Figure 1 (cartoon, rainbow, N blue to C red):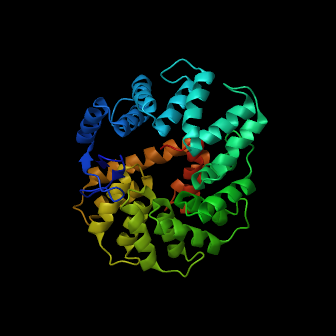
Figure 2 (cartoon, rainbow, N blue to C red):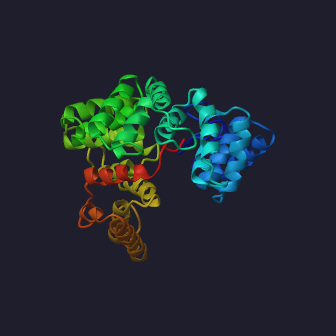
Figure 3 (cartoon, rainbow, N blue to C red):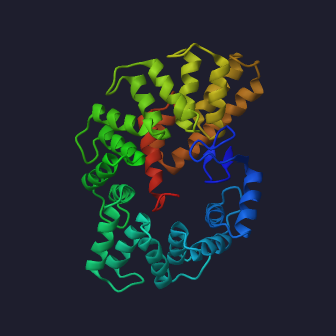
Amino acid sequence: MLYCAKCGKECESGTACPECGGKLLVLDEYIADLTSRAEQGEVDAQYLLGGMYYYGDGVKQDYEEAEKWYRKAAEQGNAQAQFWLGRMYEKGEGVKQDYAEAAKWCRKAAEQGDAHAQLWLWVMYKKGEGVKQDYAEAEKWYRKAAEQGDGCRKLGFMYYFGKDVEKDYAEAAKWYRKAAEQGNADAQDWLGYMYYYGRGVERGDGEAAKWYRKAAEQGEAQAQGWLGYMYYEGEGVTKDFAEAAKWYRKAAEQGYMYAQDWLGYMYYYGDGVKQDYEEAKKWFMKAAEQGDEDAQKFLGDMYEGGKGVEKNQRKAREYRRLANAHGLARAQSDPSMMRFNWGGRHDAKAAEEWFMSQMASSLPLRP
């Protein structure tokens, strides 16, 4: 994996970031470069370094180091760093829990137009956490967030998962639609998902495909994967294996595990592409490295049968053990996984349903 020295985006390959044109570096070089720039006072580098320590990305997770770098960036006026510093005070991560201090930093970010912070301030005024309870002030910040496309998306997320509000799929769909109509790719992806499952809207494969396409055309990897799946199954669109392979490839090249698995599957059987065991192995390997048990099982079969690789019973057994271990671990953490990870190719719909459920672990989404 490569990292953009300028914006921190992760990329599979290349020399320049497709979004900002920044130089791509391997992890060790990226961390050294980021640390050097942060120490010299570069605010964006300080913010990104804070995030790496907060999540333990490429470095040992360390809330105190995260707080240190977020504070440096926040004191220079970086709204995102102000927001995350406030969140750390709210949770007592790396600092003593202090709701008043959390509200202080949240307000600084909110006043700069950060939608995350505006929504959080809305919740704090509703609950009276760190501030005096004030419904009029809460409504003010709610409306400011709602005026922004990304604020609408975050409201959709909050209502979908019931984060600080009562769960309401119809309300979630309403806010996702507002953001989607403003061109927000993540909201378009979510709206496609809600139409596919009929959550808060009348179920419709055609509408799902329409919104997935809008997001996919903006480069949203998950939407590209879903659009590939819909072309493969002929749901909401005319079945077209070649078109499925095209969208799976776009998502797979961005590192989306499910798409890598499916693209390997298509090369393995020659669906929409010329059958090519070498290509199948390549994509199965990429998915397997991310823990996809289906890809691991296919690699086990390939090594056992000598398809695209030399026969190797030891490797065949190793990949099957990995697949079984991953399948069991996921099944134990969520028993519903059993129905689509054992006894044959996984059910992509069920797998995505499980994956989406994991996104509710925290608010806001990772920056």
